[in-house]
Length: 157
Ligand code: HEC
Image (cartoon, rainbow, N blue to C red; front, side):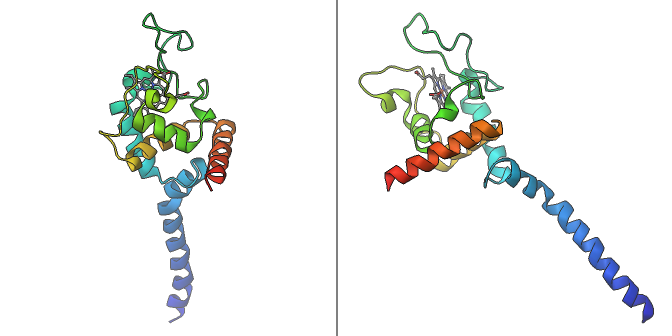
């Protein structure tokens, strides 16, 4: 009887330790990328590799001289890391650019080498790709972009 009394609190301690170890990746993911689960970021990373990396770079570095027009007059693919300006745009804009393509979003006969991806990915998959991209940004860029998205939502109301 006495032995069980000593053992029970110890078991509780061990169980709490296991609980924390199990939940840690989830807690860490929450801390680094807002409310987005790690599995969504992982899916986004895979989809990025499949659909975006060819132009925007495996490490999100974009195409060379991305600020100067190509001989065709169209723009090269910009980086999606902090050196680009993807983080200047609110969530809704990023979703539309990816789903419908830059030409449709800019309008006025604008021509772009980037197609829309609405026929290969649904909105949730596109959001996963964008969550992956966001997860690579430093705090400052991520906070700025979150603020832009917040404003966009307020204006839509
Ligand atoms: C065939 C090449 C190509 C592929 C593939 C491609 N893009 Fe692009 N992307 C571009 C180009 C070129 C631009 C510059 C827009 C323009 O034409 O002015 C661009 C611009 C963008 C922008 C706007 C960035 C900004 O700073 O304004 C976003 C967002 C974007 N792409 C997301 C994606 C995502 C997400 C994928 C994958 C699902 C993807 N792109 C796949 C070529 C590509």
